[in-house]
Length: 155
Image 1: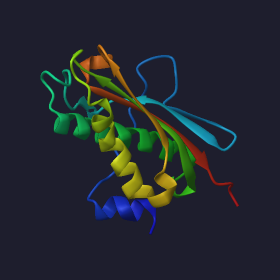
Image 2: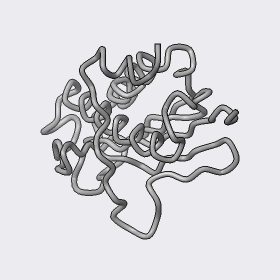
Image 3: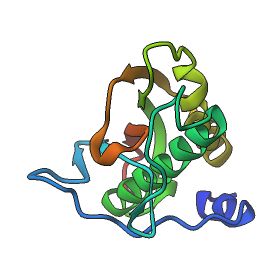
Image 4: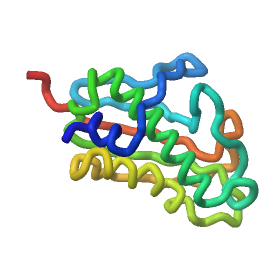
């Protein structure tokens, strides 16, 4: 089954691309590797939630934000790759979690993105990962996701 088919089965459509808020691109290809700039949980061009894990944002809300940020990253990847079915695999998923100093479940938050990546890409969705706690993120969002993928040769 194609990635588009899996998305459809889950009732998910990739979001429209949001232009980067600074002097950089949303994703860039170098050889067969695509690096996607950090993506925040925007939905229909609006911030999904603001706040910190361990305060205003629950673990489940954080996972939802990680999932939405991943969808934005996949939209960037799709645009550069010319289709998600060109993805041969993933090198790394990086997750940043804005949290209180007492919050320690950063990895559980980023699981929201990792689980969806595995659902959509099966074995190709395996990835190395970092889940990093930070004091704040752009626009006050609780999660940011970055992604590095390897593409199959065209042909």
